[in-house]
Amino acid sequence: MHANASETVRLRLQRHASQGVFQGLSETAGRRGKTTFNFRWLMGQEFRLLVDPNKQLLVAQKLLPEIETYSFIDRDLRRFVTGRSDPALPSHRRVDADLFSLTYTNRKQTVSLFGGVPTNDYAYATKSVLTAINDLFAYLHLNHINYLHENFSLPEE
Image (tube, rainbow, N blue to C red; front, side, top):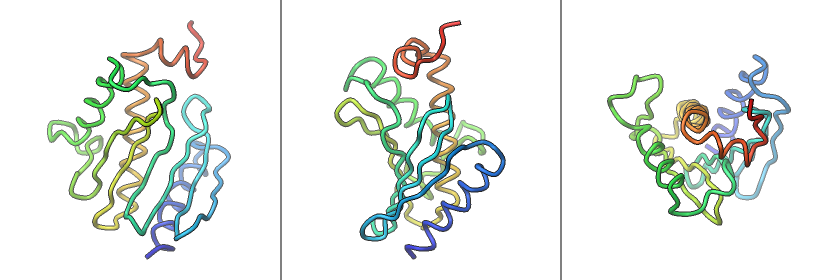
């Protein structure tokens, strides 16, 4: 099961890398079957995706720095991420909570997205977490552009 989970995620990420969506894809095998994938993506930022087959988790680690817990932006982003499972969303943007339970977490003012993979469908989980991250950054562009200017050096023009 461990190799299959990591292999599935690897193949999905490699497909994006070969299409030029990601740059610098690398991976590190960790203890107890964990694998961490690193790649550059949105706004040239480094992203880290952890696969933990023992806990049936896929984690997008340390996505957003400097988000004060329970601040306006923190509460807004929590609502946004929770809304990714809303049946009103188009199916290609919606996360099926039975296949991948997406959760927002803010620890030490750093946001990560956790996802449980109860059915071991890591292809679906990978697609879902990447879509959620892309949608999250699009949402930030629309609703919290100052945050992106301050924390991701996004030009103001």
